[in-house]
Structures are given as C-alpha cells and as structure tokens.
Image (spheres, rainbow over the protein chains, first blue to last red):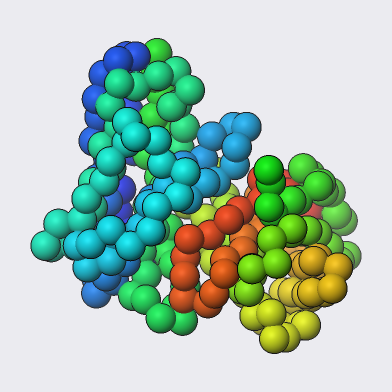
Length: 112
Length: 113
C-alpha cells in the first residue's frame, strides 16, 4: 500500500459527460501529480500541484482541469468526454526535494 | 515524439538467470532516471534510480547502468525470481526531486520457474 488513495477505482460514463477523479496523497506529501496511461501512449504526465498551487503542466487537454484543496487532496475534472479519454488515471504524491513519488492504484475510466 | 523508448515490449527469462531491461532516451535535458515496476491492478512502484553523475547504482538484486554518451540505461535483475514478473517502466526527468516524469511504454518481464 503506497498510502496514496484514489477514488473511484472504476468509472464508466458516456461521451459528452463530465467526471471527477479524486486523490488523497500520502500524509505530509505536498506535491500531487496526475498521469494518464492509455494503451497507445503509455504513462503521460498531465499536471502537478504543490501545496495548493499549480506547479507544472504536461500534456493535459483543455477539457481537463485539476485542483488541490487546503487539505491537500486533489481532484482531476474531465469534461466533454470522448472515447479516446478512456484510460487509467494515476495520481502520485511526494514530499518534494529528492524524494520519490508514490503512486495510487489508479482510476480506470471507460467512456462508452 | 517518444523521448524515452523501451524497444522490447516483452522479455522472458528463466528463474535464477539475469534479466536485462533496456531503455533509450533522446532528450539531453534528462538528468535523473528511474525504474518503476507495475503489477496488474496496481500503481507503479518505485524500484531504483540513478543520477546522471553516476554510471551505476545497485540495490540488492537490482542494478541500473547509465551510459550518458549513448543515452542508454539498463536494469539488471540478478537472480531473477518469479515474483519479479511485472511490467517495468523506465522514466526520466530533468532533475531529481521533479516527478514530471517522462515514461517509456514498458517492458513486460516474465520469469519462468
């Protein structure tokens, strides 16, 4: 158990809908990272938050957004969903500095 | 444009033998490299890392070698055990402490008893 909790584990939704994925980082970790793993692209970095503020953006679509709340949990919002958004979405957290990041078990999103 | 490449999608090795997983990268800005292991239905788990100032890092049965001039790294597992069967991801980042990782597509290792 990495200490990073992601909910829900599975999500099935229709095209055009909006979903919210939730991540609770390890206790004390200030940084949260979101990654998308699709079949053809592998694991891709989406966005990073550090202590409530956006720190870095990767290949995140404009239809996607994220935030980190004062209690440090984070949410990834995916809207106007398309079939191609079906993927595993991972959250990772780290305390910063030269420490490794720990990954959650992921949320498997299926868009039908 | 894939900046981190793992050209072997799969690898089968006999238990007790050495497993060698390879990874190539193209971005000269990458300064810190990591290997993650992933079992089905679980998130990636950190295995071992190496900074560009080193050419080798060892942790028990796992050793990572870095050849900066060739932009190549490899993970050696000796001896291989059936529990090592998993997908192994190579990842790179411009600096230690930054987890904006660029991942390869993974190599599925099967260790045969």
